[in-house]
Structure formats: structure tokens, C-alpha cells
Image (spheres, rainbow, N blue to C red):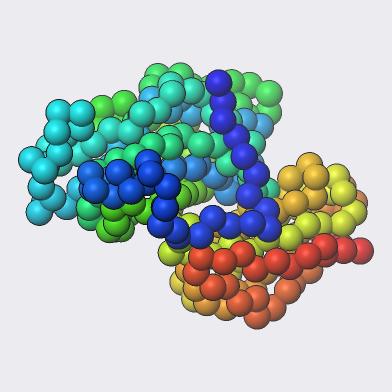
Length: 272
């Protein structure tokens, strides 16, 4: 079963647990990790990827022997419990996301998240479906750098943000290759810019640009949008809306402040 959610004005903060289960988790040296997947806009009908696994890689000084046989490590890596599902990346914009994993894992410093793909990956262009070649993704997985120390007894939410437009390469033979461009961020260590767009049912792309950071998303069918994984700082938000066919209307909201662990609400923005 596909697990989807919508992140708009709210944001999950970094928190310690206080119930009995959480105390036991802290004593055992585990953290709770939720892994979400989102996508930036892309000029395709659909992009389907077959997710078979999510693996976290711990730093070299991680002590595997501190954990019992319930936790299986392979070369310093731990695989999360995930369903084998096919996701359309282009549905994961406007604040929507897919939950790939949600479980307690060993606490400690991790350096990488790997997304392991199956064989059922395709891209739809102008109504035609093409196989999406993913070299090495089925073996070693798509490697995403992610340096984060997981504290025992604490909940973490990790966002894997695909950039479809930069990740898919058209080959000379007419085929398509996936060379993934993915950002990984912890919600607790980044912020969100969220809002809504009027009138409804207007195609629009929203982009936040700050110092060395550019993040884009599409508006949802409900008019909502959320720009995730933004490091603390000041951003200019550009809205490009197609009110009339093939005519782009641009609105810029300048100097939007983002604070780690919080959501900055822009409210309803009217494009005329």
C-alpha cells in the first residue's frame, strides 16, 4: 500500500520521547527515523521508480557489537524495513510526499543514505513509456550524502528530494538514463516555506533561491505548495504561473526568512 502525506504549513520538530516505549528505546540506544521522498518539477508525464530498500551507512567508529542479533549490519550499514513499491515522482510535489520507512534504528553517526531500486523503472514522455535505465541502482543503490548524528530516544524525519529535471538524461539511441540528483536533509535541521496560490487549478512552479541553494516545487491541485529542506537563511521566492496558455506570469516574494525546525507561512498569494 502506498503511503502518502501532505506537508504544508506544519513541520515536525526535533523531540525527545517521554512514554515507556521511548524510554526503553533510549536505553537500548535507538532512534526513530522516518524517511520521506519528495520531488522537484520535471517536464515529463510520469517518472516511475521502483523502491526496494533504504539503507543507512554508519561512520567507521560505529560499534556494531553494542547491539544484539535483532539488528543486522553489513559492512557498517543497516537496512530499514521498506515496502517494495513503485512511486510516480511527479506526484510528490506541491508539499506531497511518500513515506518510504518509519522505524527505530540504532543511534549513532551516519554519513550516507542509499536508495535501492528494483527493475520496474519507467519514464512517460508525450504519452509513450520508456524503460528508465538505472546503472548500479539495483546493486549498490543511489548514494546520497547525509551527515547526521542520531541521538538515542529522539525522532528524526529525513527528506530525500529528487530533482527529476536534472536526474534524467536522454540518450542518443532514444532511451533514458537515470543519473540521480538527490538532496537529503533532516527536517529538524532545515526549514520549510509553505503557502497557497490563487486562483486554483493554475499550473505553477515555485522556486526558493538563497545563498547557494535553489529548491523548486509545483503547486498542488488544491493550490498548496511547500519548499522543503531549506537551510536557515533568507530566500527570494519566485512564482511562475500559467494563467493563460503559454503565457507565464511571474510574482516574486523577496527576503523570506527561514529558521531551522520551523515552517515559514506565506499565506495565500494571488497571481493576476
